[in-house]
Amino acid sequence: MRLAGKVAFISGGARGMGAAEVRLFSAEGATVAFGDVLEEEGSALAAEIADKGGQALFLSLDVTSAAQWQAVIDATVARFGKLDILVNNAGVSGAGLVEDVSEAEWDRVMDINAKGVFLGTKTVLPVLRHNGGGSIINISSQLALVGVDNSSSQYMASKGAVRIFTKATAIQYAKDGIRANSVHPGPIATPMTEGGRTDPDRYNTTISRIPLGRYGEPDDVAYGVLFLASDESSFMTGSELVIDGGWTAQ
Image 1 (cartoon, rainbow, N blue to C red):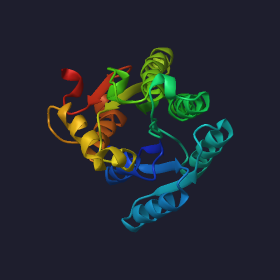
Image 2 (spheres, helix red, strand yellow):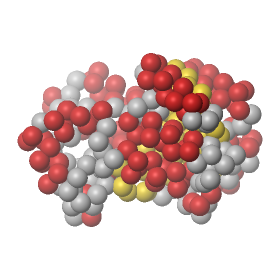
Image 3 (tube, rainbow, N blue to C red):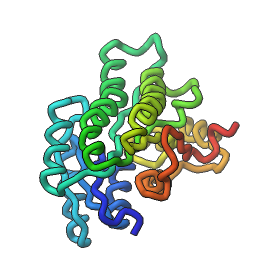
């Protein structure tokens, strides 16, 4: 098992890519704590993992709250004794051209997607340092690398912030044995993209930009996250793992 003996915390773990990561990490031997605002779905997933013989702890988490981040990390360490891996997965999308976006909407997306990653990282750094190191994986987007005309400026800006914040973390904490890498998914078939997948025009536009001709599946991303969480990637930090069906190769 690729994560045997490891303890991981995953934000936004109740559904979509986060839930796929929770399931895969558990199957690969990790003890998994995960947080989300979706309490019903989170509790059901924790029960599912337990039914399969794994160890999982669901904790309510609003990633924009420093106090809640501290509470869930403290609870994870109290329950499992340590923490080796953080996956900053929680995120939201947005809509509208620059002129159409309100200040409140800009702040909402930036707070969840960028500030949430900052708060999660800041909270776990002392724990990882105490353990002698660890791995932080931040879920960004292919739209942190290239721009498009049909996604929101606040979403692209927030994911760009995640990309460079990851590099700053990697450089500043390499001496502590802490690695930080970002993952850049293209369009993935999750609840967040359901609206675009059910609109024929938006779906066809998206597919036309993906050389492999399909949306990715949550497991396509989860296996990349697993690699970065495992010791197999021990010489990687500050890197970008692009999982986008070829979108950014064009």
